Image (cartoon, rainbow, N blue to C red):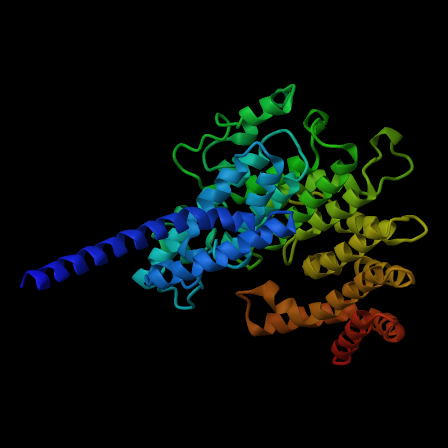
Length: 512
């Protein structure tokens, strides 16, 4: 009997010790795995491979020990908050390379749709498990975005800071569908609980909701004498969020615009040869965010507000100045910045945008005629030597043809100028991307006949048919020119150009 009792007691102690060891190992893994998640992105390949092994071996143990549906199916989502916290620690590090690694890790989580909303439901109804999963993702995204934006908002520019801006955009754009959608109410109970929002007209100059960041920001803030001072000044007073971390999309766009055109005192910590790539990359990130904004009939007013805030600065960079204007007003920006500015300007436009100037149209920064003439100037090889600008101008003209309302297109020589821009772009025999941009203009023109019905929501079918007929009559005089340009491009050596030419000819063959 004593022997059996001893065996039972020994067996119980053994199981107890096994549980203690197992729990200790799991706790250790929860500490090590977030570090290995960052270590996998080490620039030294040998070091990164070692951390990769730690991540894979440790991840298997975590997967076997967790079966909660609310935590998701992937290791990254099971450890989402732990990973986010570790990335935030990296962002707060004084090492620039550590900040870049943290931002890259957060961006990878957004790309994998983990630091992002759960899959959307067509019926707008979510189970309790899905709501719990969404709230965990929301809280992690709030922490990530708040930390990323605070680093970008610091005045000083340093090597790799454009990766932080890219991380802001990567995480922000996946939450845009819930920034202005009623679906956020079904998912969170309140739309304002989403990590980002469009805010209202009174908060257009905020970065975080209710902080008036851009009203309080002064140039003397960037007059610190060294990097250490810049790191110590986190901008907490300006970025005070009153216990909320909801970000405004217009504020993010405005912040990226400020970073793209920095003051001289902000460039002390970066080599001169790195300034141009930094500005170009930030503008490219801003374009990615602008093109992700909603463009439906009932949501285009959000684009309009952002366009009003962004377009004047961008237009000043690439607008064509006449010879009688003062030479001191001529833009001295690099062609790369000019090209990126055109891309961002086009990315902020919306469908059926009105270009007619009147007292009520506050959003009209430039008329369609002046804009198309500027694109025509920049696409011309004899006047613009930089192919990046010529490509951007062609794509900008394509966006104009795609977005302009009917009143703009039926204006005198509006369509004719667009066809001329396409013809000039197609003459560029050296750079196929410029030629492709020219064909994109023609594609936008021919597709407008079939898309006109979107512009007249709420009208009866008779008026819809009349409107489509008017658009067709506006484009018909240019049918032969468009066909000729498309047919000529069928012999191009670039496959993308011949494919697009075929598409254009197929669409235009349905015209009378």
